[in-house]
Length: 261
Image (tube, rainbow, N blue to C red; front, side):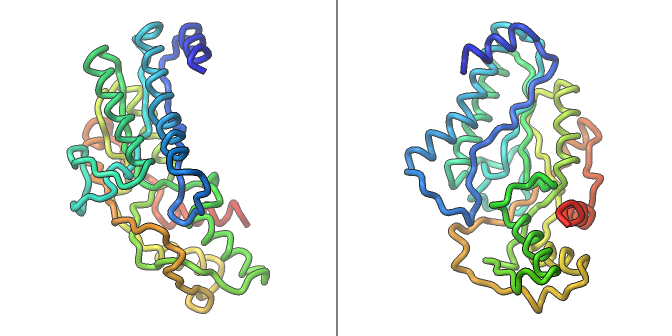
């Protein structure tokens, strides 16, 4: 609650706060909530909670640095091939809309209250903690079951879809650097490279000694919304903090496969 957050910030006056919570649906998830309920949840988690934390910093701990995890979803309908911090916002879903609202709230508290707020515009990032509803987990989980004889095929919506995929471990390092540096601006956090779903599949199956072409089927009906290929330009964060990704696309995938074996 608001009072709980105020009490915690007043008591501890933390050096850094990381707002990473998010309410989001994947592109293949069946949505059962009413539209208004999805919107309300998105705004409450992705924007309203942020405003409460920033207000608590203003009142009780103005020297705290906050990192806010925004999302590449703010660029959902962009016409640009590469996105920078100056690319206009063009969200196409409630998640993106709520993250744009969060960015605007951060800008407000930066300008009006002079608080130190870093915004990381996070592109897709993967780790062993990826939720089951996402395609990366589906690919790895199904491939492992095929390798054990527990499944016969993997059905995906689009092998040609391109994604800017990075390792979550790298992105956490970026968050920490921004908060510690007091970099009170917006920053793209991405790998800066596009890979197809087919590349992801190929690496997983090859690592397991399987030929993916024998097992993978495409059913475009699985795709409930079409996403444009988004690719982040990381030159600003590299210039300000020296950060750049250390874990390669293949290394990221193999770490996940090894974890779930």
